[in-house]
Amino acid sequence: MTRKGIVVIHGVGAHAQSGTLLDIGQPLLDWVARWMDLRAQPYRFDRARLAFAAGDTGVSTDPPHVAFSVEGRAGHDPIDWVMAEAWWAFSLRQPGIATMILWTLRHIFQIVAQLRARTWQRAQRLFDPQQYDPGVLARLIDLLNSIVVTALYSVAMFLAAPFMLILAVVAQIPIEAVQSFILLRLARSVLTVNVAQFQLFLDDEVQAANIRGRLERTLEWLIDERGCEELYIVAHSEGAVVAFDTLCNSASPAIASVRKLFTLGAGLNKCWLVQPEEPRLRRTLPPHVHWLDFWASYDFIPAGPLSPPLGAAIWKPSPAVTDMVLGPEPRDPKVTIGPTPPSSQVTHRMEIADDHGGYWTNDEQVLIRIAQEVDKPRFWESQFWVPEEKRQDVVARRRRRVSVLVAGRLLVMAFFGLTVWLRWNDLPPMGAKLTWLSALVPKEAIDFVTTWGARLGAVLDDGLRAALPLPAVLWLESLATELALRALPVAAIGVALLVLYQAALHLVWVRWERRERDESMRWLVQQRVALDLTKGLPALPVSAPPAARRWPWVLGLGASGAVFMVVGLRLALGPSVSAAMFGWVAPFILPTLGVLAVGAIVAALRARMTSV
Image 1 (cartoon, helix red, strand yellow):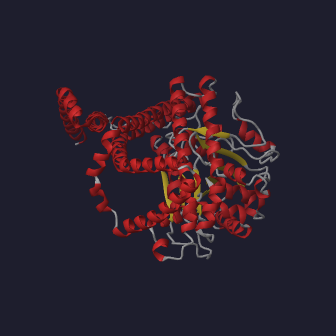
Image 2 (image 1 turned 45 degrees about the horizontal axis):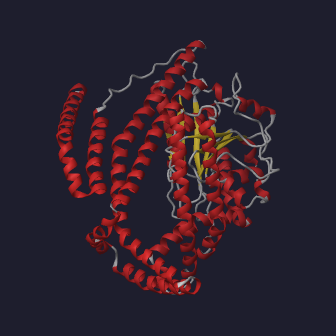
Image 3 (image 1 turned 135 degrees about the vertical axis):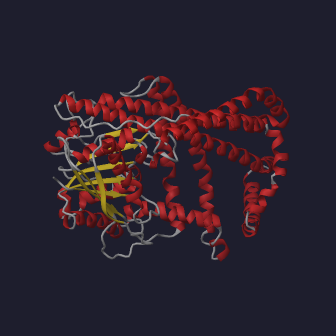
């Protein structure tokens, strides 16, 4: 039995030690454990070691790790994996905040342009779908969502640019109150922890070598201390840049034992976009390493498949690796050999804030494929493999339920815009009634904003009066005053709708998602059992599904819909109109909620009596 070592490596951010092993590595092992539970094969987690240091001490210690093993039964191969973490989040010195802000401003508009290009590609796919694309309705929802997300992101970047420039200047003021202001603290955290790591790995050769050393030592430890014969790297975001740079430029003997590299939401595209001539990122991966890339449709970090600069051949696999890539007959027409590795587009929640970290909850497209690739050199010989057309059935179901989620999100956003439009003239009185919210803000923050806001406003007013005619200046000042009066109630409406959306999401869609994931895995295991029978292998049993309890989902759907209707109508139409409409629909809503509540109680009592 071959012992295999799996290294998980994180991207930019203030990742705590052991966090990568728990957040990225554990979901993969849990997926395999769930599969084994369905097949009644015993497995074991053991020899785990977690560490939670506050920073990188520079002292060589065992990395956080865990061993995972499965007993072989009835012609099914055993598993002996050791998963370890390569942690580098605090292995570099951060530069100043002003440096980070100015560096971000130089490249932020390139990212927006990349998002717009991906929106245009979705528009083309509406009329010319690619293989495995969903139906036209789902593609239309995808396109509308992409347009809205790109527009919001572009506006946010446009508004953030002058604020960041001002912040870069304010950050130089040698006043303690300014330096400790909460907004400045937030900016310092985001920029010096996230952007700094991205920029320093590209620009600072010494610190880049130190970060590569963290991955090298983890690979060597798996070979020397745990006896692993084959190594696999699972790299997320900027971790993909670290892994690629290490495999291409390291002299460590452990590189010869690396069999496969999996990159998820790779930051390589951003690096090539910012510094396309960087020599370290234009080299070719060692030919013995198979490379498989995953990117989500709304992950703004890769924003598409791997796209190296012109002339950079980053992947030239050996004949042995080529045989691993093409797949079983009939050959997959999407897979090509060089100069870039296969890039697999996957679907998470189609949400720009969530897709970059959603790979670890994507059973149907990500976790199953990584498990197959680690299990066997040829993934289609793995005990986790099912024919592609079977797997695409569960992928299509995933795309449909995500489309439902996106449609609901777009409706909430449209409802927010409609509410603000209908209640525009009522917003100032609403804002006057919400002034009590200012009591929740610390007095020091209010004083600081008032003082420095007045000073910055005076400077801005002088600049406008010098650059524009007086009528234009007066119009802009009146517009700013009017918008300020409406800012608080608009924010309150947005928060109210967001709370309702999140409640409906967790009461309805999350339950549906969890049940669908379990049913999809059970169905895939059944397909695997049928395949084993055709090969003459003994069919291990598939455990019976638990009793379905649909009443929480139905109750959540009815309750969230009723609450959203009542609160939404009040926000959009005002108390008098909404009260009249609610009085008309109340005879229908209240009995429905009563029936749902009684049904839920009966179902819960019946389930409890059955279990007893």
